[in-house]
Amino acid sequence: MCYEMTGFIVRPMTTAPAPPRSATTPSPSASGPVLDWRIRFGVLSLIWGFSFLLIKVGTEGYAPFQVTLGRLAFGTLVVAAVLVVKRERLPRSPRIWLHLTVSALLLNALPFSLFAYAELSIPSTLAGICNATSPLWGMALSLVALSEDRPTRRRVAGLGVGFFGVLTVLGAWQGFSGLDLGGTAMALLASLSYPIGWIYVRRTLAGTGHSNLSLSGAQLLVATVELAVVTPLFTTFPSHFPVVPLLAIVALGALGTGLAFLLQYALVAEVGPTTAQMVTYFIPVIATGAGVAVLGESLSWSTPVGAVIVLAGAALTQSRPRAATAGGGGATATAPVPMPMPASASASASASASASASASASASASASAERPPRQS
Picture 1: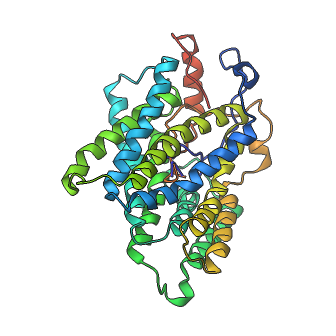
Picture 2 (picture 1 turned 90 degrees about the horizontal axis):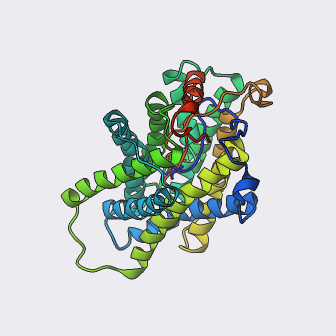
C-alpha cells in the first residue's frame, strides 16, 4: 500500500519525466511486452485495490504481524526470483544496507503492520481511502523537509481540499460517531509513514548506482527480517492454519507486493512515472467496491463523496506548471531508488522518490562503469 509502495509512484516531491531512451535503455518494443500497458495498468489497479480485502481476510485467521510477515516473505520470494533471472546483484555497501534498514521500516514493515492492525477494527473500504491520503501527507512534509519543493497556490489548495475530504469520510460533523478512532488513526499513520520514507530515500539512496529492482529487492528482504524478529515477540505460533486466510496472505504477498512491484517497475520504464502514478486514484475506488461487494461492508454516502474529494485534493497536490513538465530535452531524470509499496502493495509500493539534478549527473557520470544503472 506499496501506496508497498516499494510499488506505487505517488509524487509528493518533485516529479520529473522519465529519462529519454538511449542505447543502454531498451525501448518497450525491444523488450516485447506481451500485454498492452493499459491492460497491465488495469491489472495493477485491481491487485492493489483488492489488497485491502486480502488484509482483512488474512487477519481473520492470523495475527496482524503474522499477516505482514507472510506478505513480505512471499513478496520477497517473487522479486528475488526475478533478480536471479536477470542476474541483478544486491548492494554490497554497508552504508546502503544501513539506509535500507530505515527505508524498509518506514515503507514496508511499519505501514504494512499498521494497516493490518487497523483492519481489525475498521472496514477495508476505510483503510483503502486512508491509503489515498499519502500524497496529502507527502505534500505537507515536502514543504518542510524539501527546500527545493516550493508550494504553489494550487498545491496548497489541494492540501486543504484533500484533508476536507478526509473529514468528510470520517463524518466529522457527526462527532466521528460509530468510528473506531484507534483503527482509523493507525491507517492514517500508515499513510503518513510512506512520504516520510520517500523523503528519507530521496535524501540517502538516490544516485547510488543500483537499479530500482536491486534496491527494492534488498529493501523487501530487510523488511522481512525485521518482521521475522518482531513477530515472535508479540505473537504465538499458530496452532492451526486456516486455509482461506492463508491463501489471502499468499496472494497479498506474491501478487500485491511481488508481482505488483514488477508491473509498476515495467510501467514506469515504458510510459513514465506521470502516467504510472495515476494508478493511485483507482485504488480506493476498487478497494471500496471490493469491500462492499465481497465482504458486505456497509457504505454511507459520506464515504464515496469524501473519497472523491480526497482524490481531487491529491491530484491538485501533484499538479505542476506546464513549463516544468512539458518536453523532455532538459528534464531532470529520476535516479534509481527503492519503490515503496503502499499498503495496497507504497505507499501509495510503492513509489520512487524523485532525485535532484545532482543525482542525475552522478548517474550519468557512472555510465562508463561496469554496468550503467537503470533509470525509471
